[in-house]
Amino acid sequence: MKLKQLLLSLILALGFTVTAQAAENYTFDIKGQHAFIQFKVKHLGYSWLIGNFNTFTGSYTYDEAHPANSSVSTEIDVASIDSNHAERDKHLRSADFFDVANYPKASFTSTSFEDKGDGTAVLKGKFTLRGVTKAISFDVKQVGAGKDPWGGFRRGFEGSTTLHLSDYNMKKAAMLGPVANNVELFFSIEGVRQ
Image (cartoon, rainbow, N blue to C red):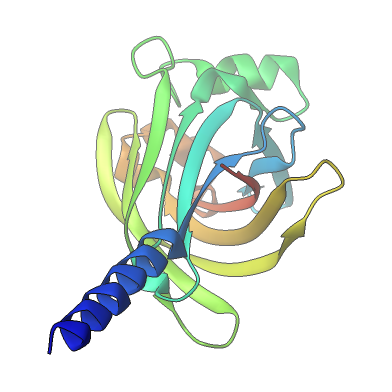
């Protein structure tokens, strides 16, 4: 009887150890800049304005055995907006749009990760911009995972969503036409396992 209890305790202990190690922690590869947050918005309905947020930080936890346990958080330096046009970027940083003087950071914290079982997932969370927090969701796809040439391990994801600028009190966006209210947000994140 004692041997059975000992074996059961050992199995349970090993099981808990495996479960605890199943979730892996990653940080965004900012140093090598293998992480991107980009946006695309129509200009007057005639063309696309495409840009980046160049400065941000973030981390995520990924549990391959139990994907629902996965999570991500990121913080964006909104003043790092880069649309490849200095005067436009200055205007975008102003109170007409992002108002970086009063709201220098945007952030996202996940609330759920739903694996679809076909290599895609839905990542839901709270996004804060200009002091307004809204629930949003990203369609996510894992790009790949494996060892890198420096002895580390990396895992990458991409995802996209559509934001509505009017939800974040950017009323001046209306002067660019009603189609400018919809902004496609795209991320490609390579994480380094810690």
